[in-house]
Image 1 (cartoon, rainbow, N blue to C red):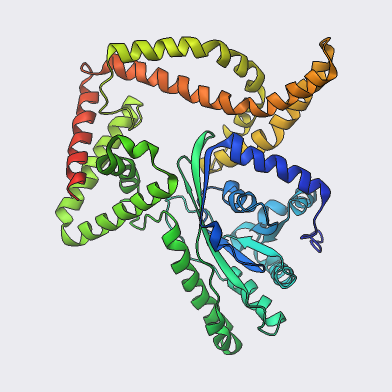
Image 2 (cartoon, rainbow, N blue to C red):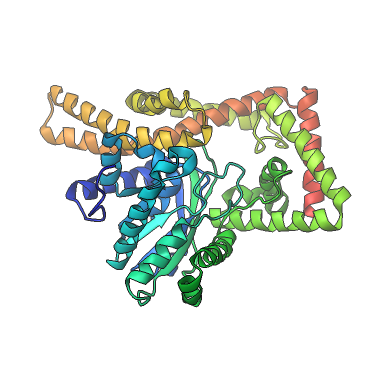
Length: 448
């Protein structure tokens, strides 16, 4: 394994690239990047813990969401197998943590070195971040917290003779869409906490202290995230979230901030938890109706936001005229963006783990293929007989063009599905059945 000493050292090359990735994440990839709880960020040092539901992007949100700080993040060790990749990750300020299922027992001893290094980084006033769950949670729930972060936290205090006053800062990511660009996201920052009450336990029974800190940390992260704890009905409860918001908020539901959506989802889950206990037959009714509705949507290839709408001929005529107006601009933007936009798709198509799609689209697209493509077009622009400063303006525009390109791409996709829906409304029996099912669900949800 390569030497990770001085990984926290600031490097000019990293700082330059940090600015680009920060822009790519907040302006190009996400339509809206909401951060709640900035006032909770303490003075250094602190240890960041975050939920883990969406691959690489889960780490990028805290890393680039609080740009006044530079943190070292800990990721799973199996991605460090090749030295070239490991060196690149070190440059990105990422440390490995080894799991038996990924690298075997022979590498577990390396964790002691990594945790010691992380503890010293904290003692030097820097920030360390990691995922206590140590694995992706595919069902939008909270997994059990492993002891790695607790070992680092206690060791950091031990090095300072328990005078570091290390704070643990809980965070959680909440996504509108797990797979593609052009959507909203929330980085939810909770209140920091200390764990001095566990120092005596740690001195006598370290394993017990690790477990207690893990449980305490879970209690601080859970209120910040979407945690669909009902494994048996996970898919149905997930599908109900958007319908619930529509039932409670009406037409304003789609304009809700991500923090408001999360609050709505959490309220819904709590209501259904109580319903399952108090009126199990009604709970089963909701699950069965939701399953039938979701199956129909999949068969029809429609999204929930369309079902129940009454599209008139004049509305579709207006949308068609607007689309014709936008079409020339979209054509130009398509030519300038389609190559870097599609390059990540070559990798995404081969992914077995589709939850990594967004990470690949961001990591390969916005972070790699777009800057390379823009620089290539910038170089070719000097062939045009215009002043040199025009090429600089062209390069600046190239960095902005992905924003309207992605927005218009979504516009035309929705326009296409609106026409499909308009052509079938009132005629398709399955669509009518889906509309009736949704109407039943909305009516019952309003009574909750």
